[in-house]
Image (cartoon, rainbow, N blue to C red; front, side, top):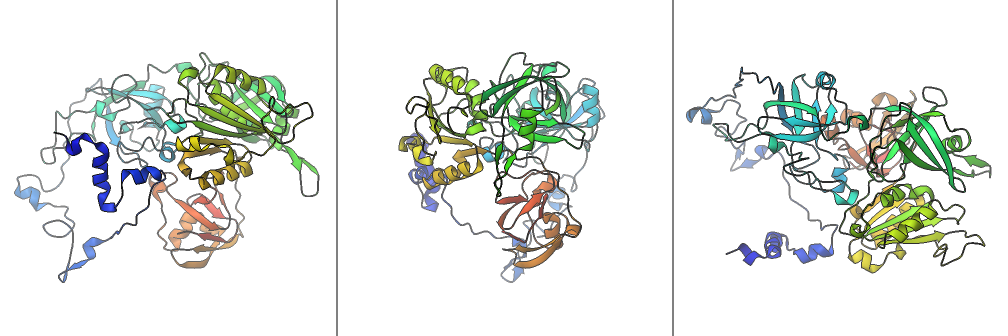
Length: 578
């Protein structure tokens, strides 16, 4: 006999019944339905029958010394029991750590969280890293007497020399951004449970020793040692420059020391620095083009459009970096590149249609995505809407046509805003209308297609708003916009009015001596979100109602209406939703 006669939806409906909801109703609202919750804090202070509730202990107080344990024959205070035995084969101490973004083994499939914590991490000291020849970002194997598991390394200078701290949890795939899962057991597993056992348990709680054990670590045997990522930026030489379209140039780089290079995920980018260490130094981020996985990789390729326009007076203005790359940089010149990185990654295996909106040079992450698909028969249905002025500015036209012939599930719709006389409608392009969300069929919406955008900011903003108006969930829309790195200099005489809206702190004056908005809020006795101080990056995000900020680290949050309080300082009078 099965509960609910084996009908899982009936079981879900039973669980939802107290809220007056059904699974069918939720399916009609994939973005969710909000219900207010009645919450109460500081319940130990509340009065019941004229007495303070206190805590749920025999004394109603916070108990450090436990008479309950004493009466049961156990030590009333915690005791440290250390083993003097040293396992020469397992010389390091292993402990577990909870990732601040996830609820134990849940939620690795949620895009907003997986972007912030994409990999299972293990933390080691600098001395252990040096001794073992391990760098930040390397994959290691942690071995114990029970088993082994794989983790990505972060070197923590504050960690005790003999300690390894590894995150626990099971890693599901996050298909929407092309992040794989990791098996619970076997080759490639990142399951911390493989490192511990229940053979020894705590006499009082029954808990297994998850927090301490013996281990050793080594570089993963699956890692090709000469294709490891690197820290910072290293020297590359320009080996090729090639025109792809009017104002569009493809640039190829090879490592100056001829090393083999690590692969990347389709959609990721490198940071390119020219004139490093000089007053003319510039750094920009560029999407990598070409297949993401290449055997014995020796080069990276980017594609750069020469940015030009006119100012308010009608004078021609040019992008500094794109002008330099197009006009001054020559084959054989030395530049400096970071290792590939970035969270705008695209799915190779997904059960939903993929709809792409690309404007001009915004095609670059998508050409990498399409050229990385090795099995066209298993790829998702892909609809690419690609906007250009005309055939002169149409980058990758031949490569995209070749991909469309090889991939029956790839549908390319070209939009030419200013077609040339020689451009044939119906052959070279489909329409001269601007791309809008109206091009998306109702069928694709019903199938819950995923939407990926890269191009001019006004285009992406307009299409995003139009998709949301058509009831597309915001978390099914993904976009990429590169911003130049900036060095923030604070003027010592700056001051602005700041209003903390919900805290009813009106027009308090921030000065440059007050530091970040988070520090300023603390001074104003405002309860600011500050999980960033304990390693939960971006948990200090606050919505901006009006005004402008800059971030001291030069990096802006994905949502322009948010600021990261630990890094943000005002550049105008400011109203914050807190």
